[in-house]
Image 1 (cartoon, rainbow, N blue to C red):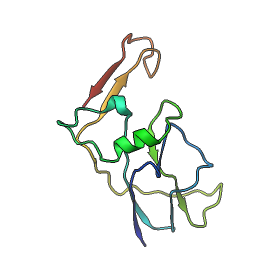
Image 2: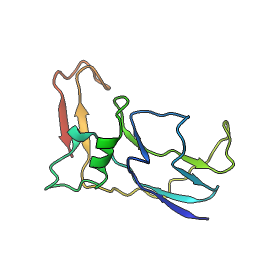
Image 3: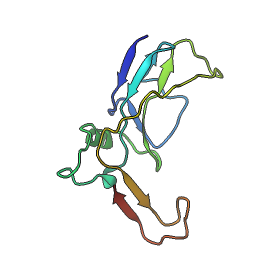
Length: 126
């Protein structure tokens, strides 16, 4: 078993879409372990960097990766050697660790779970 570390960067992230045709940014063998770095939020979601830790690659991903649709920044995809379309893969999450000391929440009129209940956009850094 090999351990891999997939860092988030403009070369390993895509923004706002899932796409089966994307080329893998990492290929692993069955049974390998992977640590995946992730980032979240567009430039308008970032808190004051004097008060919170912002991952160093976040600004570069914002600048170099086109935002295709409203949605999240995704790291990957990861391919498994020998896996073919239609195969079922078992993925075991061994641990989750936060990379930053903040998160964000957005309320936006006409979207989300309660689209008619809020009439002003509100972004909250937590």
